[in-house]
Image (cartoon, rainbow, N blue to C red; front, side, top):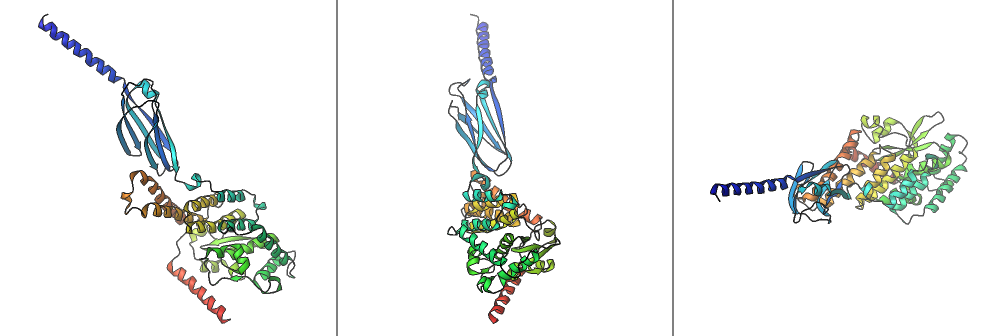
Length: 436
């Protein structure tokens, strides 16, 4: 054959091979899947290829983008066997994009990609604690059906399982009956209030000559058992949690319009008289009337906090239960049950959105998880493994965000001077008691 014809034949043959190769590769496409993830947590990206349209010994290029970070790798493709392509910690709302390239259109069309949550970062959603379920059932009661005595004892029993709720409820009912038998007790709200005040704070046969008084040995409730109602009923020595709550609980049983109210680190009583006027009563000091200016002098706070309703407001019964639950949050935080404390605060805030104590308990819980799970293990944040860093960032963000929320509403941390002033007052009161 003529050499030119041989050369022309070779060229045509090579061209045909190139066209066939190009045609085959023109059919190898890419496909993208987008997932908008709202809830913080650890997510898994799973891929499953069908044998449909899949050539033997196929390889594909997989890219996973989490926010601005992208990882790409080439893998052999196996049909009908799901595998985990990646896991990622999502600290907040974020998009995950998955791209697969190098397969035919039919192979990509039959490929399934999905994400599922391996671990929620939010304790309130992740765990179904029985204590939270029990308290949720109390919150769901209508206001007129809520017995604050039972609610307080239910909370306290979660701290001390030995507490007998029914036996203590009988004690409360017996105390209320004793108040009704006192000569001061009458039809008017004022007479009922006076009888209640006398029963609690004035020594006499009505209280076995054991009036209830402020515990000057543990005024801050450092021993959390001293914040429990049964402890107060037994010792007759209380603090700014147990004293006002007992007064409100007994007042509820007597039909007196009293409720709890808050200032920083302190609970007091609000009483509404026959004219509808709210009057402050300081339960740690004989339930005597206290002017607003005096209350603010004892427990300073910002005008912004007052305007935003953080303090000095008469609380509903549900809001009062949220305050009671704060003692349980405190107990769980002390014992390392941080997730329970966060979940409880989440529940309390659903019924009392301005519960600054719950906000700060939430911040504390997230901060302590970050400390125990990361800061105690790694000398610096950049030493935290990449697949765990999202969770750490979430914890830090939540801690800062909850503190910032409280500050935006006007909360300010107690100063050293304010604390020292209060402790001096306690010492003076202690010395005066000894002198008397």
